[in-house]
Length: 211
Ligand SMILES: [Zn+2]
Figure 1 (spheres, rainbow, N blue to C red):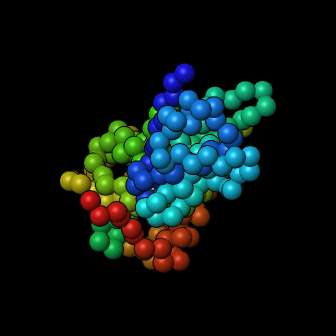
Figure 2 (cartoon, rainbow, N blue to C red):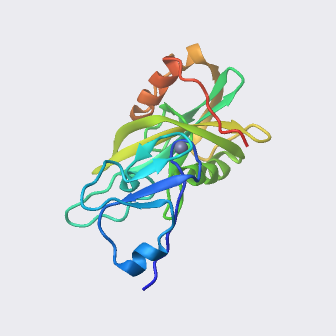
Figure 3 (cartoon, rainbow, N blue to C red):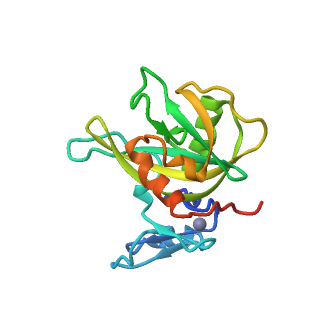
């Protein structure tokens, strides 16, 4: 019997110091082969099954990352990530191009999480594909909820900053603008982005883990 233990990373701060809380009593081979960061909890669950030693965030592993294909009983949310890209006191806003969903509305650029990706990895890939930029991903700001067809859509947005040249064009947008914080409220935003916008307008401060 062999198990592969994948520790993963924190969806909030990106640290790899993740504890797994596992409900159940394993057979001896499994118990003996599990790493020190796997904590067997017996038959009672203490709450979320993942915990970050870096930032103290706790979460459910099934609530993060790629959602499996639907079955008869479960329609998984569409999981997408967005970047609040900042440059000094300005923030990048992107307008959905004609022909795209939510055309004409403003959003934070990003896209879908694919199988095997962390949210942060998905964001780096999407911004490379969509805007042709490289970014450093910071901490999670929050989640906006929307709909995508029959699915619920979960948008997790992260602070980000450019590593290199700024974007000049987008595959999904017809306008890219750097806006001061007070200008952000003057645009019409896509529904899932609104709670993120509110966090920013409420004074959320950019946060990055020191390299
Ligand atoms: Zn963390």
